[in-house]
Length: 399
Image (cartoon, rainbow, N blue to C red; front, side, top):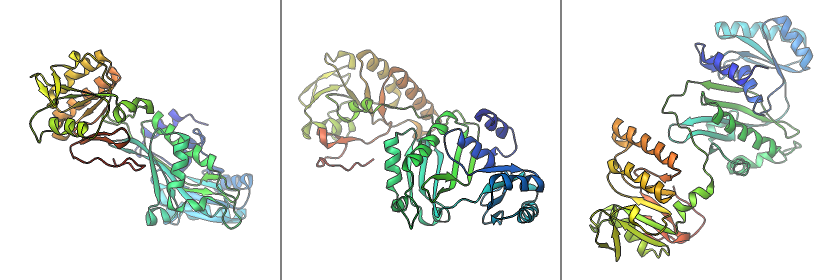
């Protein structure tokens, strides 16, 4: 079996920059994703031999990187029970697919009535996103799909499976065994791993992902689209949940850019945090010094004598980079960056944002932003937003 690197490099050097169905499945199997038993053939004789080896009944499909939506185009022949029917189907596919036919697939005719879809795409902001939902003809009609940004845990994959409205189809159904959830979880985490390890893989579509009568899921059809990743391609870095604690539940907060002018973010944010009953320490930073909100104003983060968990920044974008070495020197792990003037302003702002992200990553700093509206955690009475609203603690989150 060819290695992943061989499959991808060969396809990228071709005109289509996509894998045909057979190549797509070879790729998926190397990430533990079960696929239908099949062979790729180039002649009638090979097709007959493959059908006999696989065992009747079989399915014959046209195969090529250009060939999508094969069922709608009459390029799938089902329930083939003998050698003559194999020859007839092979000849028909050769005529119907024409020059787009690269080879023919002979597959086992699998049992099972429950069709789902699984896949992956790359979002410009979030990077690789894995999806799962109802498949077959219902994918577009019902749009019953759940999503997760890769990477994610097995527990998150299990939640994902049960989020869809059609999750009851995973149970016992008219004599069919319940879907093997552990296998489904393995498929979703396999897609996540594949996407993270191979940025050249831009899109994966497994449809249908068939649940057989015995409950075992299997990829019956698959498509993988490739592209050379650009420099701007998102590459998410796994973050431990504990690293987010200073953002959501800080013990001490420093407001950089604190202001006495009502209506400014540097005034609204500390005012709302103080009025919300936050029990942690509050520090305010402004080069002008003095006193604000009944607190001494420090001219720099480095002047604060205590430890700081979180910095809330409202200074101009051009001055934000100067904070990174100060935060690193004081061991401040997190920042909420309210300041605008980054990628939303054009090329110069985009370059500045990239530089900031890289510097923060190297310094071990997690930050929310830029150009964010703040953060609210009612459980910690941390209401760091521009609106004077103090929600009751509960189980609902808004992003």
